[in-house]
Image 1 (cartoon, rainbow, N blue to C red):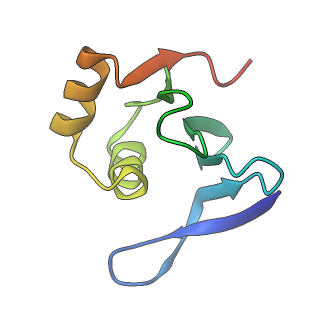
Image 2: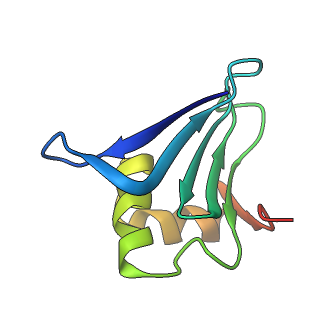
Amino acid sequence: MKVENITSNNGNKIANQFIITDEDNGHTYFQSYNSMIVKRYNSYYSNPTELDQKYWNYSNTTGKYRNIFLGETIKDTKAKIKSGEYILTDLNK
């Protein structure tokens, strides 16, 4: 596993906002503070991106860095949830 701080649009490392890469399978995760927010699979075709049902839109801070991680706006994310491209699940079991 590789853990690094997410980087702002200005190139600064952000405290408490992490990108985790599982080097064994290539999956990447976004974690905000102690909560897992997003899980992306190594292949777009293998499984949909998963968002934590409780924390995916927990706060403005979480949303800001989730948007950076996903490379999209909240409007895009909501549309992908609605279409089934993203699924809501419990990533913090």
